[in-house]
Length: 467
Image 1 (cartoon, rainbow, N blue to C red):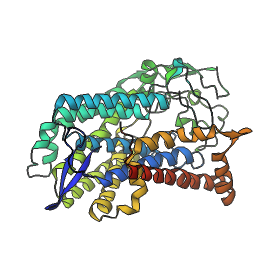
Image 2: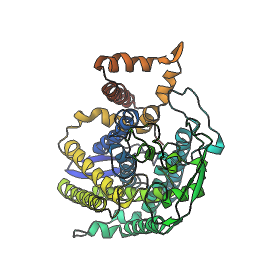
Image 3: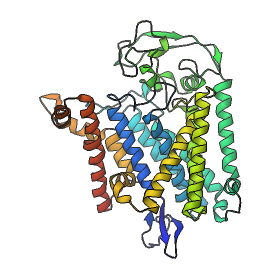
Image 4: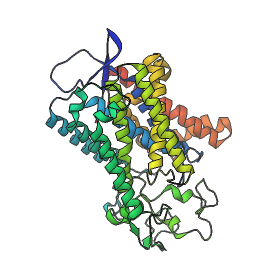
């Protein structure tokens, strides 16, 4: 994890360091506290939207176009990964060593992604595990992060010479210093546009393989025969995933099943309406191949913010650049969405979605930077900081439900009679006489705050889970 230490002669200068790349043991540097807190906030948001989104669908993923709270989580992660790349790789002197470290971390991310989201690990209340390899899900959150990390980190390694240079005067000088990075971004965007607008999508058929569905085993036909369509049934993103990954290997519970076209309970989950389109029954991969290519842009923007932190020495210069760029991205994305030029869509990872979420990430990080690294009031955010310093542990145990699944495995007479269900029912839902409010408070206090305290204890003991 990238860390910083203050130069006592100039408190606004940051010296980026990577303490584990040599046999020497220098004095322990300070971390970028605002980045840890931002990472902790993002993990906490994931827990919140995953575990409370069923009762509060307005914070869950938008069924298709639009941007709810849950739709900011993935881009925030990728933005943070980008900033961490710029900071952590700067001090690895050996290029081959840096490449080996990046490849090893990528393989670790892929392994944990397949284990946690490939189907082997089930929901905490299922009390089962295992997956039919004919139906394993190849893509997921960590797999997307792995791809973006690999591509952007390799670019950073092979263009590291720019980091040894001073930024010349001029508003666009830092963009010129890393012009290759932006050329790669342009190539990524051009490729994405060419694919989603140029690929012909024919009619297609599928059979429902979700054993929890009442339509299990039924076959449906979807009529398309179009090019450049961005609606659920006929977009090129889904078509390429079905052709390359196989329809049995994509996500079986896409958010579009909560859309108005599919269910009368929208945005809540519920039975399909009579005469619902056939595509409502179909699977769709929200972390698929083409959308993951577009997601690289979020990481490139994060790397740029890391470069600003490295090269611009004053707080005012950094914040001016970050905030102006954040507002520019946010406004551009909103204009593209509301003019219907390019709708904001997380599942397609459209360009307007990249702009809106990256702009929001820039402004949120800038706010934390002001409060924490300038005003030094990080004690208000200690639980988030602790979570951010042990993000992988909290993600696996809380966001992926491994800890809850372990405790649910110890029940009395009935599988639903567990400690976790008892706490939810009697301490939260029963006290507030509202399942919606009770579940929300349970997630905030019994999950997020609980893991903030656990992460704080582990930090005090010096225990961290690092990839």
